[in-house]
Image (cartoon, rainbow, N blue to C red):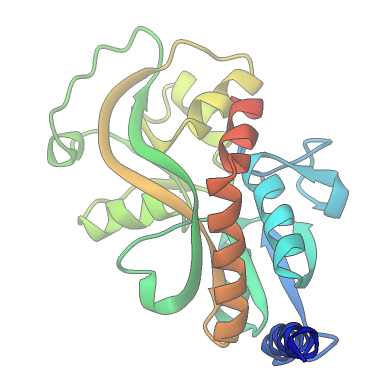
Length: 251
């Protein structure tokens, strides 16, 4: 009798676990979008379009493992520009976007899973440039380059500033070196990584004005079941050391 009770309890637990996952349709799938944002996500061939295995980077690896563990199907595409990906994810159910910086302004626009990584927002100057500022307000007197509709650019605009926005953050490296902008507002370590890819080193950090976290942003219509499964999977991966392992392998 005891054996039968134990078997019945085990069967019930299995049925319960299956029922918890049966809330999603069998064909449910998330359309994941990302961009070239090294070292967090990038095309293997450095182009502006890639799919699935043609995409690598710290957060790309974490997100893949997260979806695998959560048992949720997905497609993964890297495209350009960020502005288009951002709007697609806002408008289309079952779409997700990473690596998206979490901000209070964006919080009600998406459902969030993370953090995937921690970063900082900085103003960079060209090598040999002696610009010195103590605040963003002081920096307002200079020409500041940023990335269109990126969280850094949105933050500057929210402060009443008018950054010179580029469609690709890589364009700001050349602008900075050519003297077309005085400062480059970007994410650290992304900015330095992009600069090194074009042979530029020695950029000076003039101001670090905010610490930030990168997340997976999901369309607001995403079922809570999906969000919960993914968050649980990410929490487990972090506890097991997988997140730190991926980060250290790229930096």
